[in-house]
Image 1 (cartoon, one colour):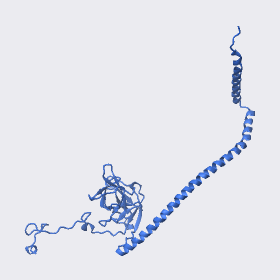
Image 2 (image 1 turned 90 degrees about the vertical axis):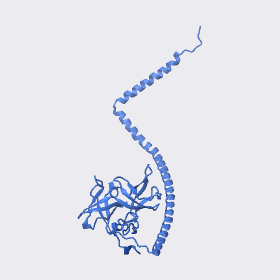
Image 3 (image 1 turned 135 degrees about the vertical axis):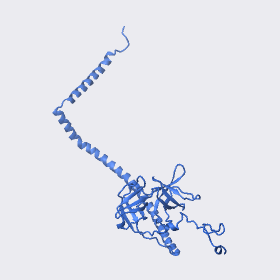
Image 4 (image 1 turned 60 degrees about the vertical axis):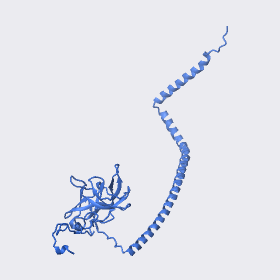
Length: 312
């Protein structure tokens, strides 16, 4: 009896032959690649030479299209930048016009009020010879001294602001007490809130604020400058900016980076008052108490007076 199912032997035979041929072809190619034949190398070189111009022809338009796209992007960005720059130029012209008007108005007001003009300072610059910091004090040594007109008490500044003041002078060197030293106390004022105070160094990165009124409302980030009170330092020199700690206390971050001092300028011709310590009784000078009688014949200072002086 003949079965109705087709035979699988005939369908598997072509498939097996194809697999065997592919395996043999792969083995042949593997062995062929292992042989270092001169003919094969020549064929590879020929194909490379033949295909190189074709590849170049196809790559050239692609590269040009890429360059065109980059040019379009750069032109678009340049256009946007040009528009932005024109807007900034117009804004700067407006601010320049306002500044000129304000300067002219300020000159007129100074003329009306007969304001004394600011002095032109005579400055000499020296190079820092030592690094800041020490066991007992934060000072630096510079290479200018008495022969250059330097004297004790003169103000030391840099391009960023106040550095300190001269505390010791030699013939060709001077020592400057830095603003951050604990022995340094500088009268200042807050430029935004307009409150006077005194800043003191704490041998660290920041300055402590002292003698600030309880009514003051400091503004975080506002600029601090020398006030000139007491006549020891010129007014208007940058000291730093106000910062607020996590505890809510205010400190001043100096404008000058004392670890990177290279050159320091000394103001030579600032008119210091030699008797300022005799006339200045604290930051805000208090009125001298008037003599008043305590016990009979003795005034408040403990000095005995005659009866003729007490009877007015």
